[in-house]
Length: 138
Image (spheres, rainbow, N blue to C red):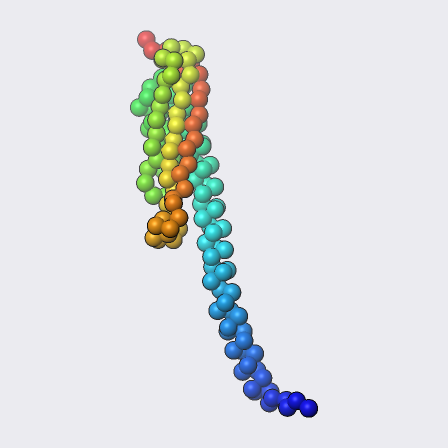
C-alpha cells in the first residue's frame, strides 16, 4: 500500500511543479511573442516603403522634378523606425513626356531586441515603382 501525503504537502508539490513548468515554458512563449511582433513590424515597413515608392513615382510623373519626388517619398516614410531609407529617382529614357520614371526605396529595418543584429542580420527591403511622365521638360 502507498502512503498518502497530507493535503498540505500535496498542494506544495503541485505548486512547485507548476513553477517549474512555467520556468520551462515562459522563455519559449516570450520568444514566440517577440517573433510575431517582429514579423508584424516587417510587414508594416514593407507596406510603407511600397506605398512611398508609388507616391514618389506619382509625384515625379506629375511634376518631372527629381527633388519633389524624393521629398514626397521621404515624407511618406516619416513614420518608419530607425534610420531614413535610401531613395533613388531615375529617368532611364530621358525626361520627355511619356518617358518612364522609376523611384526605388531601400530600407534596413531595425530589430526589436537590442544587440540581436550581431546574431541575425537586419532585414533589408527594396521596392521600386515606375510611371510615365505626364509632362516633358521645357
